[in-house]
Length: 121
Length: 110
Image 1 (cartoon, helix red, strand yellow):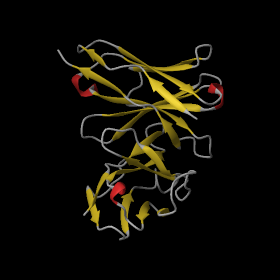
Image 2: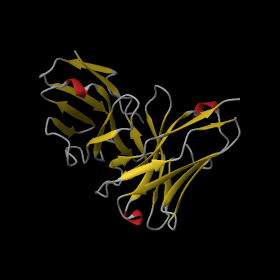
Image 3: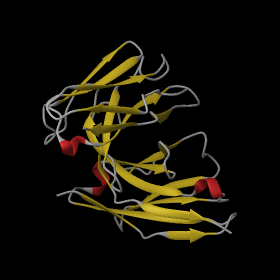
């Protein structure tokens, strides 16, 4: 069965960076695209971007371009999301999610358990 | 661009409830719609993709549809375990393209 396991909660100061990892299992890592989505407390889901695990190509939300890096380590079969210049508004649960491989490219069928990132001075 | 959902919906067990999602030509008008169910404290679960397709394991009580720039999720035979937040999502062609989510609808089973 498919599982996506994310790294643990983080507490960061404003201006710092955070790196969250996502390690899928139960399928061939390079066969699917992985997305990153976040959810601030009581807020809607917000898309950060995706990475094609077969070739490392990424598509990032314009809102986060210049501040977010999404990448994969094929050898470690792990995906990473790094967000820089953190602000209090970046406090959220960050999820990785797998695209099921259909026509659209954004059908997220399996999700990680979420990683709470708290930005506070 | 925004996807607009009603903030709340409710129904009694056995009833049919419909949740709407209103967008524009840059998102729902041109692209397929997904629906996610999120139980408190858990990750979202894919209920509907390609506007009207159910992943394996999702009961046929959940029905998705799309027309023009709007989409709907219908839940029939409402059950207590359906009490959750429901989000629509679509690709938006503006701003170099991104996935856009609706604001979510909290469904209460009375």
